Picture (cartoon, rainbow, N blue to C red):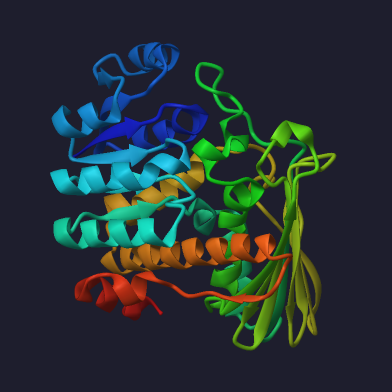
Amino acid sequence: MHSIGIIGFGAIAEKGHLPALQSFAEIEVTAVADLSEDRREVCRRLLPNAAIFEDSSDLIATADISGIDICTPPTTHADIIEAACRRGLSPIICEKPFVLMEEEYVRVARARDLSDSRIISVNNWMYSHLHRRVREVLDAGRIGKVKRIELRTGRPDAAKGIAGWQPRWRTDVSHSGGGVILDHGWHQLYLLMSWLEQWPESVACVARTVDARHALAEDEATLDLFFPGAEGRIELSWTSETRNNGGLIEGTRGNVEIHDDRITVSSPEGVRDLKLNDRLTLASYHPEWFQSMLKASIIRPDSAESDRNFAEAGVLVATIRAAYRSAGLGGVRLPIETVAQHTASPAVRERFARCL
């Protein structure tokens, strides 16, 4: 039995994580921490037997738990993960973006090595029907070798948080650490990396803030990514007229067009539409994706997948930081250097190398 404490009980925790956690007999949510009294009252109604805390450090130190699920803003993640490792909690599940800086990733990698805690970044689009559909097409060789991928995500605004605590925290960089690149770019990056089966070598990024509602956070961005023998582009916006997701995967024998509710495969065998279970823009929570992730990572734990996920998170952190540096220099192309594999402990470096 896994006794889980949820830290941060906002919308994603209530509508995405909690339903997925409660779907397993092997998992019980026994504690919750949230800064907002309004949210703690919601917890008392939904989880009458759980211990309720205001401070996450009190939950980590005293709650009767074996693991935690972190759903707080990104600037808090590294400190919470380190504290959980010091207590020896496992699993440690953390919402995206996992951490913000290369230095934070190295700290977390060291703490993971010392505690041997299982740490999972919530890269839940890897468990989407979209990912499975595309992966099946690529594995079957339908479009040949992938040469270029373009992915697009548009939203009319940054998603609002719970009214009980700073609903526009995503546009406050003191809590979010950044804007649309972190919020949506994280997911699109690991999809692109998975479909190319490579990690990027360099990136060029342009970003801007168009809407005054988004203050100091960027609300439009384009990332051009360069891989060995392939390229990728990610276009992100919080200023779109509608919610939309789309893209194009170009291969040597055909292509895959990504739509909101289907993919269209064009190959020498013809053109075929493959429906998705749900529209990609239907909601922001996708508890079924999180449930599949829990099944693979917690219920039937796979150490190889856990190591892959952790290594992937390090590449994502390094790539996003390089993208921000590129944007600050006007879009110049910069190399991506994954600090973790050079500065973490020997055991972490060995695990990381196996995932390259």
